[in-house]
Amino acid sequence: MAEYTCIVCPLSCQLTVSETGDGEVTVSGNGCRRGEIHGKNEYLNPMRMITTTVVVSNREEKRLAVISQGEVPKKMVSECLKEIYRTVVEAPVSCGDVILKDICHTGVDIVSTVTIE
Image (tube, rainbow, N blue to C red; front, top):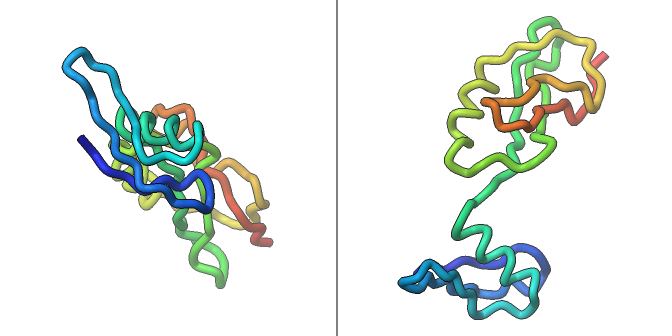
């Protein structure tokens, strides 16, 4: 059994997720179907967005804000961050530019969230 706070809407329902002996996953406490789906996904395969910064080598602004274009498996966040933190970019960089393609073979790109001339 696991407990989560649902984040798919402002209600913040308190979810309880249980797994039966035959592998069926049930969710209680959800106020809507989306909460049930979120609870099952969080229990079976938790995913996370990554937002952080990378080093900019040739500008006064020393950091560039970046974000993942999709979610990565929660268990891979640390590995992804290690790769991101080793990355150094040079300006100019435009908002939306891919900084790291297919980070850690997740199929997710890391992109710039701002433009630095």
